[in-house]
Amino acid sequence: MKKSLFTLCFFIGITFIQNVFSQEKYYFDYYTIYDFKTDESDNAKKTELNFSNSTNSDYHLKIKLLNKTVSSVVLSDVKNQLTFTFPNFSLANLKSGTLLELSSFNKANYDQCKNNKNNYYDIGYATDNDIKTINVKIFKDAKKTILINECFMESKPTNITKLQHFNIAFLTMPLWCKKFSVNNEGVITKSYFLEKGNKKNIRNLIEINKMDFTLSISKTKSTAIK
Image 1 (tube, rainbow, N blue to C red):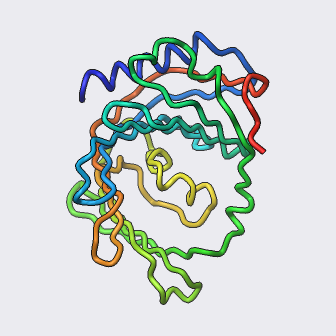
Image 2 (cartoon, one colour):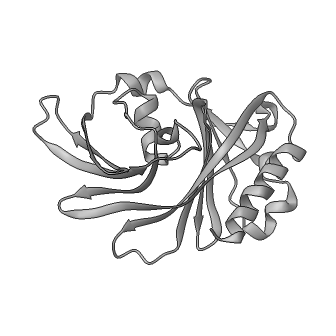
Protein backbone atom coordinates (compact mmCIF):
# COMPACT_ATOMS: atom_id res chain seq x y z
CA MET A 1 0.00 0.00 0.00
CA LYS A 2 1.41 3.37 -0.98
CA LYS A 3 1.67 5.86 1.85
CA SER A 4 0.24 8.69 -0.29
CA LEU A 5 -3.07 6.84 -0.73
CA PHE A 6 -3.38 6.09 2.99
CA THR A 7 -2.67 9.77 3.66
CA LEU A 8 -5.44 10.62 1.18
CA CYS A 9 -7.92 8.48 3.08
CA PHE A 10 -6.90 10.06 6.38
CA PHE A 11 -7.15 13.64 5.15
CA ILE A 12 -10.49 12.97 3.45
CA GLY A 13 -11.88 11.75 6.77
CA ILE A 14 -10.54 14.77 8.67
CA THR A 15 -11.75 17.21 6.01
CA PHE A 16 -15.25 15.72 5.95
CA ILE A 17 -15.62 15.84 9.73
CA GLN A 18 -14.18 19.26 10.44
CA ASN A 19 -15.54 21.39 7.64
CA VAL A 20 -19.15 20.37 7.09
CA PHE A 21 -22.12 20.42 9.46
CA SER A 22 -25.44 19.41 7.97
CA GLN A 23 -28.45 17.16 7.47
CA GLU A 24 -27.28 13.95 5.77
CA LYS A 25 -24.69 11.85 7.61
CA TYR A 26 -22.82 8.86 6.23
CA TYR A 27 -20.60 6.61 8.31
CA PHE A 28 -17.77 4.62 6.70
CA ASP A 29 -15.89 1.82 8.43
CA TYR A 30 -13.82 0.34 5.61
CA TYR A 31 -12.36 1.17 2.21
CA THR A 32 -10.85 -0.57 -0.81
CA ILE A 33 -8.30 0.67 -3.33
CA TYR A 34 -8.08 -0.78 -6.85
CA ASP A 35 -5.76 -0.29 -9.79
CA PHE A 36 -7.91 0.23 -12.88
CA LYS A 37 -7.24 -0.21 -16.61
CA THR A 38 -9.79 0.37 -19.38
CA ASP A 39 -8.14 -2.44 -21.39
CA GLU A 40 -4.89 -4.42 -21.48
CA SER A 41 -3.07 -1.72 -23.48
CA ASP A 42 -3.97 1.08 -21.01
CA ASN A 43 -0.74 2.48 -19.48
CA ALA A 44 -2.30 5.37 -17.55
CA LYS A 45 -2.09 5.22 -13.77
CA LYS A 46 -5.73 4.96 -12.69
CA THR A 47 -6.88 4.26 -9.15
CA GLU A 48 -10.32 3.80 -7.58
CA LEU A 49 -11.00 4.38 -3.87
CA ASN A 50 -14.28 3.01 -2.53
CA PHE A 51 -15.63 3.88 0.93
CA SER A 52 -18.46 1.86 2.49
CA ASN A 53 -20.26 0.74 5.62
CA SER A 54 -19.95 -2.97 6.45
CA THR A 55 -23.48 -3.14 7.92
CA ASN A 56 -25.31 -0.67 5.67
CA SER A 57 -25.18 -1.04 1.89
CA ASP A 58 -27.46 1.94 1.15
CA TYR A 59 -24.66 4.36 0.22
CA HIS A 60 -21.26 4.36 -1.41
CA LEU A 61 -18.48 6.94 -1.89
CA LYS A 62 -16.22 6.57 -4.93
CA ILE A 63 -13.09 8.60 -5.69
CA LYS A 64 -11.21 8.20 -8.96
CA LEU A 65 -7.59 9.22 -9.45
CA LEU A 66 -5.70 9.62 -12.71
CA ASN A 67 -1.92 9.93 -12.39
CA LYS A 68 -2.30 10.84 -8.68
CA THR A 69 -4.81 13.60 -9.46
CA VAL A 70 -8.40 13.20 -8.32
CA SER A 71 -10.66 13.15 -11.37
CA SER A 72 -14.06 12.58 -9.76
CA VAL A 73 -15.77 12.27 -6.38
CA VAL A 74 -19.31 10.84 -6.20
CA LEU A 75 -21.46 9.85 -3.23
CA SER A 76 -24.51 7.71 -4.09
CA ASP A 77 -27.37 7.26 -1.61
CA VAL A 78 -29.97 4.70 -2.69
CA LYS A 79 -32.21 5.08 0.39
CA ASN A 80 -32.73 8.83 -0.07
CA GLN A 81 -32.34 8.55 -3.86
CA LEU A 82 -29.61 11.18 -4.02
CA THR A 83 -26.32 11.50 -5.86
CA PHE A 84 -23.76 14.06 -4.67
CA THR A 85 -20.86 15.15 -6.85
CA PHE A 86 -17.91 17.28 -5.81
CA PRO A 87 -15.51 19.48 -7.79
CA ASN A 88 -12.26 18.06 -9.05
CA PHE A 89 -9.26 18.87 -6.93
CA SER A 90 -5.61 17.88 -6.64
CA LEU A 91 -4.08 15.96 -3.76
CA ALA A 92 -1.98 19.03 -2.99
CA ASN A 93 -5.18 20.99 -2.27
CA LEU A 94 -6.95 18.26 -0.35
CA LYS A 95 -6.32 19.81 3.07
CA SER A 96 -7.85 23.16 2.07
CA GLY A 97 -11.28 21.99 3.29
CA THR A 98 -13.15 23.18 0.17
CA LEU A 99 -14.25 19.77 -1.09
CA LEU A 100 -17.80 19.79 0.25
CA GLU A 101 -18.40 23.53 0.08
CA LEU A 102 -18.98 23.29 -3.67
CA SER A 103 -20.94 20.06 -3.87
CA SER A 104 -23.95 19.52 -6.11
CA PHE A 105 -26.67 16.89 -5.96
CA ASN A 106 -29.47 15.44 -8.02
CA LYS A 107 -32.31 13.00 -7.42
CA ALA A 108 -31.53 9.48 -8.54
CA ASN A 109 -34.56 7.43 -9.56
CA TYR A 110 -33.60 3.93 -8.48
CA ASP A 111 -37.21 2.77 -8.87
CA GLN A 112 -36.91 3.54 -12.57
CA CYS A 113 -33.66 1.60 -12.62
CA LYS A 114 -35.37 -1.43 -11.02
CA ASN A 115 -38.09 -1.36 -13.68
CA ASN A 116 -35.66 -1.00 -16.58
CA LYS A 117 -35.70 -4.13 -18.75
CA ASN A 118 -32.76 -3.34 -21.03
CA ASN A 119 -30.39 -5.94 -19.57
CA TYR A 120 -30.79 -9.49 -18.26
CA TYR A 121 -28.31 -11.42 -16.14
CA ASP A 122 -27.07 -14.91 -15.33
CA ILE A 123 -24.63 -15.52 -12.47
CA GLY A 124 -22.43 -18.55 -11.80
CA TYR A 125 -19.81 -19.60 -9.26
CA ALA A 126 -16.75 -21.84 -9.04
CA THR A 127 -14.46 -22.42 -6.05
CA ASP A 128 -10.82 -23.54 -5.95
CA ASN A 129 -9.47 -23.70 -2.39
CA ASP A 130 -10.06 -20.21 -0.93
CA ILE A 131 -10.56 -18.50 -4.29
CA LYS A 132 -14.14 -18.09 -5.55
CA THR A 133 -14.72 -17.16 -9.19
CA ILE A 134 -17.92 -15.27 -9.97
CA ASN A 135 -19.15 -15.00 -13.55
CA VAL A 136 -21.93 -12.56 -14.49
CA LYS A 137 -23.28 -12.80 -18.04
CA ILE A 138 -25.17 -9.78 -19.37
CA PHE A 139 -27.75 -10.33 -22.12
CA LYS A 140 -29.71 -7.96 -24.32
CA ASP A 141 -32.89 -10.04 -24.47
CA ALA A 142 -35.14 -11.77 -21.93
CA LYS A 143 -34.55 -15.18 -23.54
CA LYS A 144 -30.82 -14.65 -22.90
CA THR A 145 -29.67 -15.49 -26.39
CA ILE A 146 -27.86 -12.23 -27.24
CA LEU A 147 -24.77 -11.85 -25.03
CA ILE A 148 -23.56 -8.26 -24.53
CA ASN A 149 -20.55 -9.10 -22.37
CA GLU A 150 -19.63 -10.97 -19.23
CA CYS A 151 -17.81 -10.11 -16.05
CA PHE A 152 -15.31 -12.33 -14.21
CA MET A 153 -14.41 -11.73 -10.56
CA GLU A 154 -12.07 -13.47 -8.11
CA SER A 155 -12.91 -13.34 -4.41
CA LYS A 156 -10.91 -14.27 -1.31
CA PRO A 157 -11.98 -14.49 2.36
CA THR A 158 -11.75 -11.33 4.47
CA ASN A 159 -12.59 -10.44 8.08
CA ILE A 160 -13.20 -6.78 7.17
CA THR A 161 -16.78 -7.03 5.91
CA LYS A 162 -19.50 -9.32 4.59
CA LEU A 163 -20.90 -6.67 2.21
CA GLN A 164 -17.83 -6.05 0.09
CA HIS A 165 -19.58 -6.73 -3.21
CA PHE A 166 -21.59 -3.53 -2.64
CA ASN A 167 -18.30 -1.67 -2.31
CA ILE A 168 -16.87 -2.28 -5.77
CA ALA A 169 -18.13 0.44 -8.10
CA PHE A 170 -19.50 -1.47 -11.11
CA LEU A 171 -21.58 -3.83 -8.94
CA THR A 172 -23.27 -1.19 -6.78
CA MET A 173 -25.90 -0.02 -9.25
CA PRO A 174 -27.21 -3.39 -10.50
CA LEU A 175 -27.29 -4.71 -6.92
CA TRP A 176 -29.21 -1.65 -5.72
CA CYS A 177 -31.59 -2.04 -8.66
CA LYS A 178 -32.04 -5.72 -7.78
CA LYS A 179 -30.95 -6.97 -11.20
CA PHE A 180 -29.22 -9.89 -9.49
CA SER A 181 -27.70 -10.82 -6.13
CA VAL A 182 -24.19 -12.05 -5.31
CA ASN A 183 -23.60 -14.95 -2.94
CA ASN A 184 -20.23 -13.80 -1.68
CA GLU A 185 -18.75 -12.74 1.66
CA GLY A 186 -15.15 -12.29 0.51
CA VAL A 187 -13.23 -9.39 -0.97
CA ILE A 188 -13.09 -9.09 -4.75
CA THR A 189 -9.38 -9.15 -5.58
CA LYS A 190 -9.57 -9.14 -9.39
CA SER A 191 -12.22 -8.40 -11.98
CA TYR A 192 -12.61 -7.72 -15.68
CA PHE A 193 -15.23 -7.63 -18.41
CA LEU A 194 -14.89 -9.80 -21.51
CA GLU A 195 -16.36 -8.35 -24.69
CA LYS A 196 -15.74 -9.85 -28.14
CA GLY A 197 -12.72 -11.68 -26.75
CA ASN A 198 -11.11 -8.54 -25.28
CA LYS A 199 -10.58 -7.79 -21.59
CA LYS A 200 -11.95 -4.40 -20.47
CA ASN A 201 -12.40 -2.50 -17.20
CA ILE A 202 -9.67 -4.47 -15.43
CA ARG A 203 -9.39 -4.04 -11.65
CA ASN A 204 -6.82 -5.39 -9.19
CA LEU A 205 -7.13 -4.91 -5.45
CA ILE A 206 -4.32 -2.93 -3.79
CA GLU A 207 -5.76 -2.75 -0.29
CA ILE A 208 -8.81 -3.31 1.87
CA ASN A 209 -8.75 -1.87 5.38
CA LYS A 210 -10.86 -0.65 8.25
CA MET A 211 -11.44 3.05 8.92
CA ASP A 212 -13.68 5.25 11.06
CA PHE A 213 -15.15 8.52 9.81
CA THR A 214 -18.46 10.24 9.30
CA LEU A 215 -19.30 12.37 6.28
CA SER A 216 -21.97 15.06 6.76
CA ILE A 217 -23.48 16.88 3.79
CA SER A 218 -25.86 19.82 3.80
CA LYS A 219 -28.22 20.04 0.84
CA THR A 220 -28.64 23.73 1.68
CA LYS A 221 -24.95 24.23 0.89
CA SER A 222 -25.17 22.18 -2.30
CA THR A 223 -26.46 23.08 -5.73
CA ALA A 224 -29.40 21.06 -6.99
CA ILE A 225 -28.97 19.73 -10.51
CA LYS A 226 -32.21 19.84 -12.49
